[in-house]
Length: 79
Length: 350
Image 1 (spheres, rainbow over the protein chains, first blue to last red):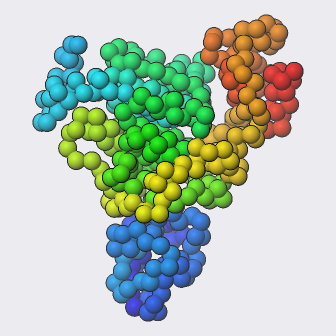
Image 2 (image 1 turned 180 degrees about the vertical axis):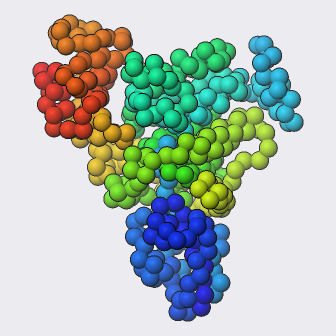
Image 3 (image 1 turned 90 degrees about the horizontal axis):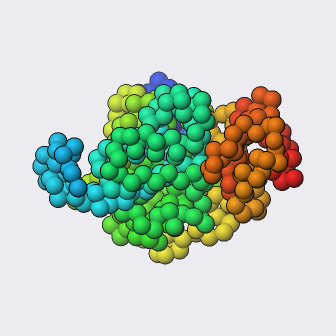
């Protein structure tokens, strides 16, 4: 199945060829969870604070559906 | 009160004289007076919020000036505490407003009294341990508060209202001490000045709206990145199992948040501040109020000045120490914590 991933802020450094918020299409096995997706992209889990699927905040064990749009955000701490 | 200067603001539909009177009768607390905090304070004071309390622990440094709009080169030369320098500028901008500078770390032992009479609380801090503390205190006292964070070219802001939006902990879960240590900061990834203005202006706008009843509140987490200009509106959710929303204020308890195992313990005497070139020393146990004038007499020869009753300055070669009455000291011109600690023992704990 195909899903779309959007990386924000410092997470984009792992895929510098992507523009911010640009959807990265990804082919994944049916039944894939958010946790597996994060592993597959080799993103450090502790740098990700918020995971939104189709605009809703979702936990790691959420099973993804075809066409899902996943937004990954680190916290923003400076001031 | 003479509202002549606010004429353009009062012309705004649904703002009017009634809105201006509400602002004049309101108190805002701004915690942290760096880039975001000083931009927020500037907007609130110009808009005519009756009382604005500014809390910050740092001194103005040259690297602040590109984005911290209330400070100038004289503040850097005079090494003024940010809260004091901001208040000086703000009083000249609007003498109708009661500006209350507080030079202090915000901790569980002072946050409730700082927040007690505030109608709205704004986050100008640069770290999450303080934000979790603000969140707990705001929930406990039933105060609306506005989170803002900026880094590099991006920023986030959200408005939390008790019982309506969920809270910071609903959104981000419990404080993660390990992630905190490795998290990017303004000292590692920098800050693009204009994003400060964007995020801080949104936050100040939310505060003015809350105080006057104008328009509709921001009920999302906004994530804005100026690099490719993206704006994400992410729904806020209340977590039904959030301890803070159920009256369990973990970060107001000893052993959590700033004095938890996050590398920045309250009892740990040395803390290296973001900004570089400065070491902060906090005493293990509060020594009580230090009489800086008396101490300066004992240090005759090395003392630069006593800016009574706020601070004492001492020069040691290339290094300069600023000591506050609560025993906290900032060492400028070094990042050698051990060296700073030795000087602290010799000068203050003798």
